[in-house]
Structures are given as structure tokens and as C-alpha cells.
Image 1 (cartoon, rainbow, N blue to C red):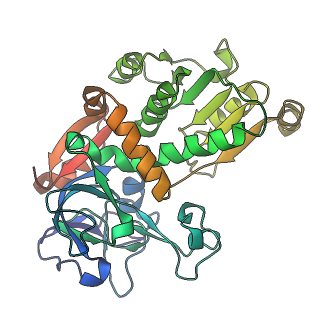
Image 2: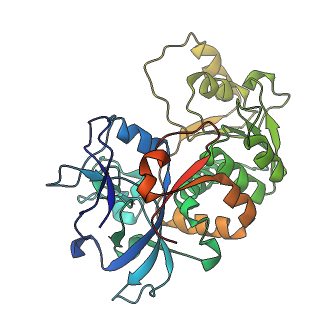
Length: 348
């Protein structure tokens, strides 16, 4: 079968393999036909050789962690042939740590977790893949065109879950949310904020293209100015750019008892002249919280299904700015200027 693979740690080794072995039964009892795989920055970093780990005994890694497929067979009866399904990306470590032992593998403490298409597990960019039942997330048939967004939505669902947990440390009545970055994660973070009835503001550098219209369609307000020029102090910030200056600016911009969730990953290697004492003073005196969030556990995947089902399907479809057949895989993994979410299609 076909599979999109790389040699981990080696740049420019992206290849479409035509004779990839069928998924081994040990991978899971549920056999799935791939429909589509979403592409994100993580994939580009793996292709650049920055990280990635092949399964034990393998030289190449099948990439792709944003999945959508159709069940071919499930002898356990958990799912039925024809059901739409997505695969949970992260699996708990084998030890397991205290968090993995209770299903909170997104909060793994020892780093021995594995991840489809990233770390130690074959990804979903192949014609067929297998899952264990607890890692198979069923989607409503109405999500057949947009279900590939489930993985990034699960990341955002976790972020909001933790924001709300932190918020309830005291009487909490948030009204204003700032999302920085209008990529897929930022736009989905804004979607989940509007579903909570909050006043949503999205900040991004783009002044043209689809982003301002997508934000407006949510009923949110779009800004293309520096963080410090915003005329309000948000109760919640979801930072999705990873840009160091933006990260520091939003920490200072949040209002009293504000919560800043860092969902973007910085590249590192850049120093900035910054008044750390002033930031410390603001965080302490205003009872603010800054925390990081990545990945998701099964509960968050189920919350993500609910969020996508509630959302306007036309709006979700607008996030998928390019659909590329697997035969033209190099085009899919070449970033375009107006890309939001690119999808590699295996079957219809």
C-alpha cells in the first residue's frame, strides 16, 4: 500500500512509498481505510529533520497525525464498517507514569509516550491503518468533509478545559478573549470561545486573504496591530503564534486574574531584552496565571467531536484551503501563502 514517509532526523527525505507493508495486527484490532490527513507545522518540522522517531526496528517513519478514515472491520464490535473515525495521536508510556495510568497521557511525566506519525508509532498518511478501540474516536457522518480537523480541535478543547479549571479557583465570569494567531489552532480556539458566548478578538499579522473574513464570520473582531495597541485587557488569552515578543506581550496585557494559555511552540535561539521584574510584579499583584498546553487525552477528543458537530460546517470547510491527492504529495507539503489547513486526500 501507499505511505508518505521520512527518514527521521534527515532533512529532505520525504517519499511516497508504494509497497508499504499492511498494518500489523499488533497495532490494533480496528482496520481503517484512510480518507484524509491534515498537515501542520509539526509535519514540516519532521520533514526538515528537526525531530521524529521511527517505530522500533524501522528505518523510516510514516508521517501524518491528523487523521480521518472509514472503518473496514472491527471484530470487537466497538465500531461498525463504514463508520467515520479518527485516531488519537498520543499513546501512554509503557511504565506507566501516574498520569498515563489514569488516561491523562497528554500530561505524561516521563516522556516515554509514543505518538502516531511523530514519535515511535507509524502515522496515518498511508492507505490503511489500525487502532485499538480506546484510541478510535467515532465521528458523525455530517463531518465527512471536515472531520480531519478533529485532532487540532482536540488540542484546543484541552486548552479550554484547563483554562476553565484554572478559572474556577475563584468566582470567574470571563467576558473577553484574545486569541493571537489566526492559523488553524487560533481559528479553532476562537470557534470554541464563541461557543462559550464570550466576546472574541483575534490578532494576526495578515491584513488580506481569508483570515479576517473567517474571524468576522464567527462574530469575532479581527486585529492586525501590535498587542500593546489593543484597547482592552482580555480576561483570557490563547496564544497560538509561539512568537517570543507576542508571548511576552500577552503576559503583560492580560487583565486582573487573567489567564494566559500558551498553545504555540517557540523555536528558541532568540534573545529579547525584556523587563522580567515588571512581568513578575504584574503576574503576582494581579493574580494572573500563565500555563502551557499541548496534545489531548481521550476526554478532549470527545469534547472536540461535540464542538465540531455544533459548528457551522461551511465555516469549518473554509479552513481547508487546499485538498491535494496523495499522488501529488509534494504539493501538499509545500506551504502556500494563503494556506490555513492543507489536506492530503487518500480516498473519497
